[in-house]
Image 1 (cartoon, rainbow, N blue to C red):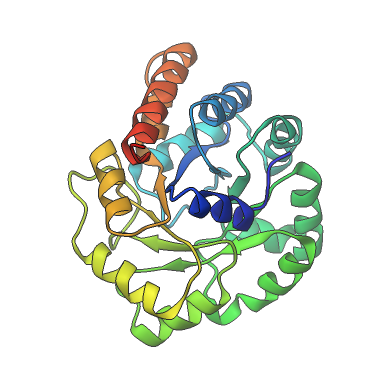
Image 2: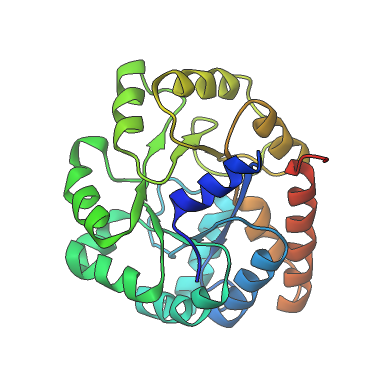
Length: 268
């Protein structure tokens, strides 16, 4: 059974390793392929896996992940189906699963019920990109009791006092958004990320994961060298899985994961 998010980061820190955190959209092209993709990512060195629940109005997602969510919804993928699949797969993985969802499905189900469903499915963490800091306690406190770590996002535009407040409340790790705008593949990493990592280090000892725009092994290595504890890669994985047949997509996904893991693994 996977460890918690915090425990996984502690283990990696002891080994002086940076976490590789791939992102997938559940149900694209179908949930059977998603389940196989989770297993392959786990085998190829993923340290945690972020799993996106398809949503009709994904504000933080770029075109690649939006298109994947649209395809998954068109197939009729539901939250219950996603959690049923995770229930089967999670116990077989070394990597803890972090569920990525918008706040409306949580509100619709009720916070306590939603958290109970996550615990039953074996989910360890939660990212809710449209949950503002000012309203986060309504989810953070019951989640902490349930053993689900809610990871908050820091934007490049966040002022210093807000960064401090987010860092204090975020559980598991702090999700540092590397660029303004939505997720997506980019050619280079912005130097501002290095400054933000240094800024966060001055106010917290919690792990820092960097996401949005990391699409190449050199990007992952760069954020590791800048001092990040984790590198989060989304659109580049989703794109590979969506191209060709499911078998071809899984092969491309597996190979890419291995390449990224090699790039951020220190040479002993």
